[in-house]
Amino acid sequence: MDLVSPELRAVIRHLSGQRRGQVETVTEKTLEIFVGDNMDVRILTPAAGESAGCVARLHRAGPTYELEVVADQNVWINGESVSGNRLLCSGDLIEVGHGGPLLRYRLYPPGVVPKKTLAEVFSDCVDGARVDGRSGIGRTGKFFARFTHDLATQTSLWFRIWILVLITALVISVVLLAVRYTQLEKHLFSEAVRIDSIAEVLKKTGAETIRKEELFQLRNLFELRLKSLEAREGELARIFSRVEGSIAFVQGAYGFIDPESGKPLRYTEEADGVYLFSVEGDGELVELPFTGTAFVIGAEGLLMTNKHVAEPWLEDERSKVPNELGLMSEHRRMRIFFPGDAEAYEVEPSLMSDSADLALLTMRAGRRFDGTILGFETSMPRPGDQVLVVGYPLGIRGMLARVSSHFIEQASEADADFWELVDRLAQSGYIRPLASRGIVSQVSDDYVVYDAETTTGGSGGPVLDSAGSVVAVNTAIVGDFGGSNLGVLSIFARRLIDRYERDK
Image (cartoon, rainbow, N blue to C red; front, top):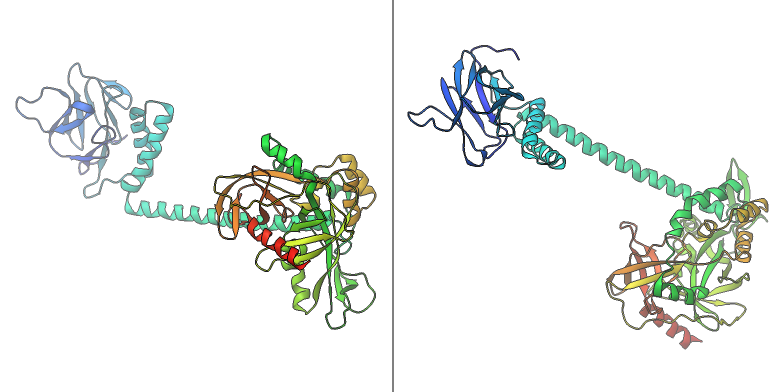
């Protein structure tokens, strides 16, 4: 590097050792460099009789200094061993002993505070980390720690402001990306809702045919996720196999009527791809499909589920506009399927809880149930308890993800609608619940929180303890905290059953 004008002042910066980060301005004609214990480098003016241990001297030489290496001492400059005298240039790296303490020599104009540029920070941190770090990982860690520290403390105010502006811009960019990601998730969710309506094979809103490529898309989309929900090990596996046949898949559809005339809401015509509705005319009935889970609690065909499954319009955004127009929601059809049974059983809501998201269903045919009747635990679950959640998450889509390619081809070729597709699933033995294990994390006066995986469609399923007793009824997903779900405590279920027994 070229030497600069005589007005420049010399500065020595310690890059390692106990004095790392310290800056010394040198103005004397002669200085001596000593290395003490713990690699402590000292730069002192000469004193009579106190030069023992001196490794090098600095002599003023016009605008810079000349380094004189004391005989038999090991001093390096910019990676080269030096003996005798060497004229220093701004930026030179002085190494006292190979692998020893490091000093950076620089020249600055008078009155200029010796602050580092970004390049100087980088080079100083690289050289300092090379000496202090004993391994590749150690050197990397030292470099980043020093680089961050020096940027914040040894650069100019304007440079730090500039870095702060860059960091702020980076943070804003990350936030914007997160917002975009959230928007994308919402878009994907809306697309999933669209696919859901296709998968459930609606016609207009209840019975349109499903195309072959859409069935394959659904199968590929949910196959891996649903496989992860299945828990088939140990004691929980034995519990699952005992209760599996008592977990019913709920399928239904509801519509709307005018409370004054009693006339149902119908489709009137389609204009530019948008359907028009009216309670007049003889168009097809408006029917909105839904699915859920229920489980047997009485041999006479009594089942328990969520209130929002028994009356799906309570939490269905699709019912909002008709209800705001004064129309009343009512069931069109509601039926259940049991695993391994191809027959569908018509059910109807029997009793709703006034204080919890619970409801009872009864089979219209009065069929007695010969399988396992699920019982309720009388004591409260505790945080840390293991639970098993059983149900039909993702509804029809969840079952389509597990069917064979041959089944998909047959269903698509037959143009199966919402009802026919489920009949085919039952006849082929594909209606089977999924089980997922979890741990109770919190118990309140109303709910139990657990991390067993489930999602839409699993509502109304039982939450079982390690003895196979129902401790809660699965009811909701905690949207702001992934992996946490809510179940209504069994005490509310037992109260509803007691009320049902009294009213019979």
